[in-house]
Image 1: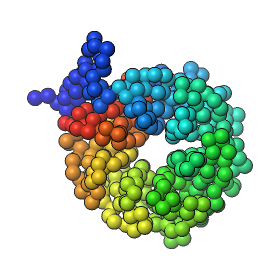
Image 2: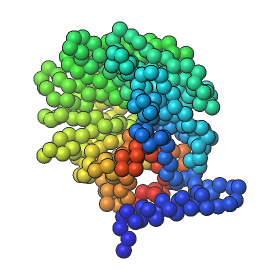
Image 3: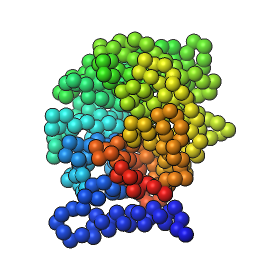
Image 4: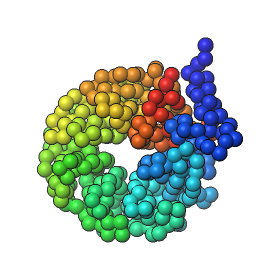
Length: 385
């Protein structure tokens, strides 16, 4: 019998042959549904985020490492078959990292962080690109209190960004939200500080125009543990209600997804010296539906909706990607043994318009660190064991 590794290698070989082996000018439709691609120079390129374009192609971003060891923003445009249209790096004399990418009005906006080489101070930045990948401008938001983005969404004619702001001495991490126009004009939201360190990680827009923001709070009045917090903000970004996941141990946020009705939050706790993943379902009115432990070995990394009733979870374990499928009621529908184990690490998973999945992450350091992009079809061809 073949091992799981041999099965995966066979699947990749079949996909590669279908992609590369034809002399016909027509590209197989299968190639747009399943491929594995690598990007970067192999010195330390890391994949962070990817978006699907209306034509079925993708823009992916990450961080590359220059020969001088400084970090640069990496971006690439590929068509729906995974073939590269362009790939470029963007850098200065400082360290730049990319976290989020959006495509608006035929332009590409990359949101990240610039760390100044002479002061080590980090500031949020926005890189604006043409559809050909040419740099139009770079906005560095150099404010009196440095802040960093963790997530950005498109809302009406502007971007809404959330993350953390550093203030005080010693510096505390405070919730941060702002609006940014495509021209780079930033309007800071209200001061949302509480007792201790806190930060926002994800933001979602509700059908009524309000926002759900997920973050963590290190300390509250009656507790000293790190806990996941969900806050509903009005359209003018003022806090309305908040919900904190109950816990007697630290909770480490991983990812969240909102389907318009319920918010699913993937987070980790430490149990017997190892990370244990959990998923909590919270209604749009911020009431807890359920909070379940996921019995999969590894650290929970990312979650996405697979269909109306199922969610895909990705974990990392010993430099491998491990998968599970969860119902919207918190039941494990498929555990990790029914999926292939994939080498490398994963940062985000997204559902594609053809009902498949696309993963962005990084290859194992054994082969040189590069961006790894995995696209599979609705039948999960490359993933099924």
